[in-house]
Image 1 (cartoon, rainbow, N blue to C red):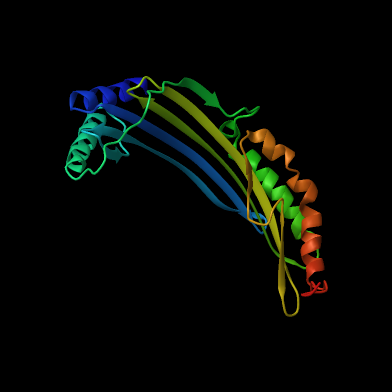
Image 2: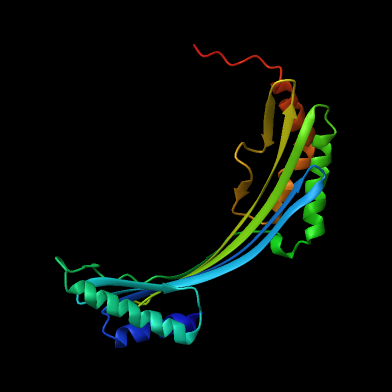
Length: 235
């Protein structure tokens, strides 16, 4: 990655940029879901892209691409310079970045277990176990559960000498039960009411969420909501 960012900065400088920076990002993600005791979906995708930002004659220019190779990096750097030069023609006030700032650092999300190394069977097994516990509650019509993990790798480099690398990992999961009565339906979910709950952590976070342990209670609360009194609308 350092070779590509150096190439972009060098090309931008040779083309006339007085300042340049490059941002590169790569994403990998997996989503596993179950519904009514059966696997319901599997999504595994990857994405990448980069952007080059420059200052030429006091004006900003920006260009980007999803292709990470040497020739494309050079093309995008030159395009950013061309855009900045065109913007300078209508510039009312030149950009002033102040004193140069140089930062060299790296960061990675602390984790105990990489979720991408855990088998699909293991993840499905735990979701299906929680699903079964919810379906065992009388009055439950629909049960769902899902797991997601994603890793984002980011690199920032500038002509002022900065080079920062980040690896950000997120893991999350959630379950939901739908109870159906004579004239209404009620949902209850765990651990929150907006689908999966995520944290910047590894697979250990999923193991500690207690989906199986809380599945029956979640379903029972959904059933209880069918006959619960309405909340008062006045205090």
